[in-house]
Image (cartoon, rainbow, N blue to C red; front, side, top):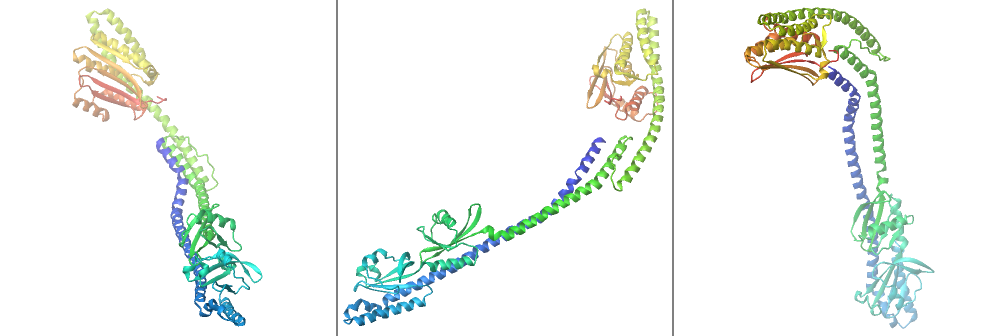
Length: 585
């Protein structure tokens, strides 16, 4: 009963945690679905950012590449133009005025190309055969040595004089024919095309104004060109750590972490320039609106969970705990604790319920007290009546033994017998004390066995009961009839030496006293009949003593007390007296 009550209390105590668990189970699918949705959204956004960034850079790279290809195409066309080819034979014109007019016509054509171009493109034509140079940048002196030093078949950065000032420009030379690139003095024509480096910077500035990136141009040699508001330290780090180890001119992107921040780096080659257009954007900046929405959702869920826990705790405290207290009170009443009262005083409807419960428990306790007192008086009367049935049975046997010894003239035996019989008589006639110790009962049994030993010289006995058990309290004459049956119905009919052994042990919360004999024993049929008689008395005299013992056990110790019988294989009977190990026993 106590175990059941404890289990119920434990279940009630876990109610609050069950409420929280249910709330978590309700929120878990929502959180899982939102988390999946968030991840899908972020993946889609990242993919979209990568795609858009790649498109933007590809568009700008294509624009720059187209301009450079146009410049290269015009430079090649200039080298094939007949009027420009005539500059090779300018020395054949005898008139200086005509020679000058021819040069002015070429310069005018070059200036028209400069005006038609998107960039401030300048052209210069070198004629090694006549040591003539024609340029849109102003007066340029023909110097083959200087030209050889600055010659570049690809776009390179050079400081070029334009009119009256020096300017950084991207320069490239085209040789006619191309086979003379290594021997410029023998070339027919050399066309120099250049455009200001700031034209590329302007493109980078325009791209940066339209987004969150920081674009720049990178050359596999390590040179780079950034927009005017670039973070040059970060670009230097990206070039050193990310681009230089993998300078392959292919379109690509990658996510890297710099200073604890994730960046998307996108690279698109510009084939005509020989450089690569690079842009990097902080992914966290792009993801910030979604992250802010995610954090707001998680905060809302946490707030909802906290409010749910508070509401669950309020319900548990104001409803579940009073119900649990009421159930505990009912369980205590059921277990026999009629003095139980509910001490809690809640400020709700349960206060009235607790008051009525306490009044009911008080009335039950008063009624049970009256009934229990009546039961005690009835039990005392039954004990005295049952004991009056046992005492004459033993005395009649003793008187028969005294008569037999007297006829045989065994005076000493009669004296010993009467001494032991006197002890027994003093023990059994003190009916005002119905409860004795097990040690006192064993002393009575010892006197009884000594008397029987006079009648049956071949009888021996052994008592093995530990000292702690001898202090246990039991009803008077509880064990003596069992020992008497072992002697009279077991040892005596066998006609041979016999031993009665009395042993005691305490195990599993039970007190067990075992009475064994090695007499004739009982058949299986007789054993079944005896057990049936104890469970369902027929009213016959057979088994009356054992039935009386069982009834006294049950009256004194409750339904857990019992008698057990076993017939031994080699002869004899074992009787066990079992009762619970309680202090009130």
